[in-house]
Image (cartoon, rainbow, N blue to C red; front, side, top):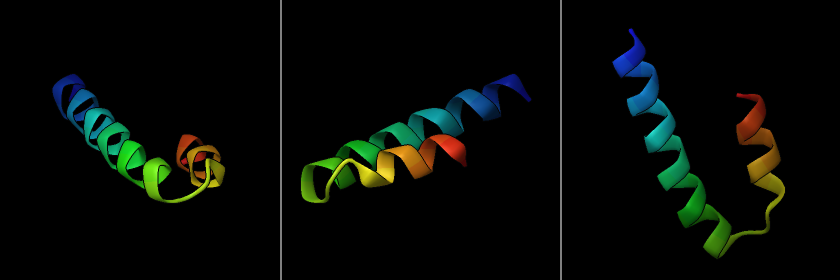
Length: 34
């Protein structure tokens, strides 16, 4: 379970980085809640 959580977090972080580069840091706040 722990591994899956870490993997998911890394995936989200990578996606966030891509989105942040293209869009404003507004999604970053929403992603944190998810």
